[in-house]
Image (tube, rainbow, N blue to C red; front, side, top):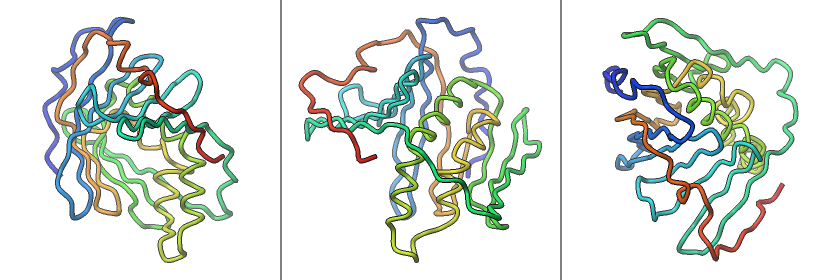
Length: 216
């Protein structure tokens, strides 16, 4: 992972109600090329996309607690509602360890039974954006649990349950992720942060889309 980026000078001004936070990350999956991820956050919505206004995107309606995945080629908007999770199994031993990092950051590790599930650096900055990212994980947690349960036993890893289900927002409570690495080898690095006037059109499902509720 890259060293801590000098990003604290960005977005130094106070955001107004008509502003949106714009976060730009570089993500990389194991064995694949790096790719751009853009996250737009307002008090009412979070949008995640590849950086193009007219591309596919995932939208979190923060007030209604819905996640909508928009696929323009298919003309489809898949809606995920927050579901009910079973309790964590007895003896579930997930822990977040945090320590000092450079420039006010917090180095973190999320572990289960001594296995490191994710680690990185967060900063107590742009906290509403961090909360929105945790809210999206919370809405999707029940779906992630169903996917995990339906997977073959050799693909059922406790770290998936920690990162995506029972402890999904634990590290985000520390602040905005500057860099993160998951047990799978997937990485995320913050490349830039700005505040821009809200473009309401970016937070609407395009007209003509067929809306389908995901299984619950």
